[in-house]
Image 1 (spheres, one colour):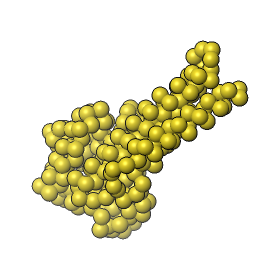
Image 2 (cartoon, one colour):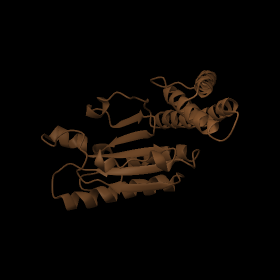
Image 3 (tube, one colour):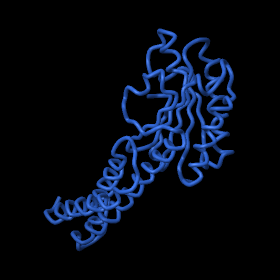
Image 4 (cartoon, one colour):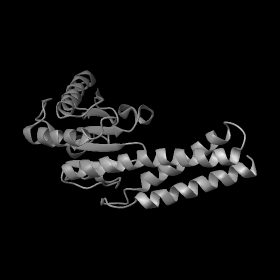
Length: 240
């Protein structure tokens, strides 16, 4: 890497961090919700700088311009995810938390978390469905509708709904139940205004904890909703 390119990449990253500081205003969440914005901005700046430097002569100038443009794009993605996480949490009457122990708290029926790639909403099974039912209960349907209304503002967001069971019963039975539950929640999102919605049933794959006690099994029965900015960010929630 040439000295000119190194200098340009550094300048791009600094400039975009300054930009991130400028937009870090106005919204309030449990934690610093703009960490993702900053990460996206720096990543975009570095990628843009490298691409800009490789597209012709005057590599320093091209790297700086590419870095700034890439940084702005990365910051925009981060800002959108942060905004969605806060809006969803507010609609559900909760906050945004990245506490890894939150999913182990049986008293938390809804958990909204953020990563650099997506927003995740976890709904506990006991507040979503009656035993062996795949139709959301009225209170759950109301919460799903509120999230769908928020997602109307983000038509490019990819919404993935994943259903999970415990290991009571056969794998095939639980696969069908998790499929139906995820599909019904996805349909409710779409009916409430969300776009680009898909669903997947995971049976009792990817448990949060070992299915060794009644409380553990209740933690594993859940619906997870993922909000992705693009197809490249998608994961397979059944194989974590």
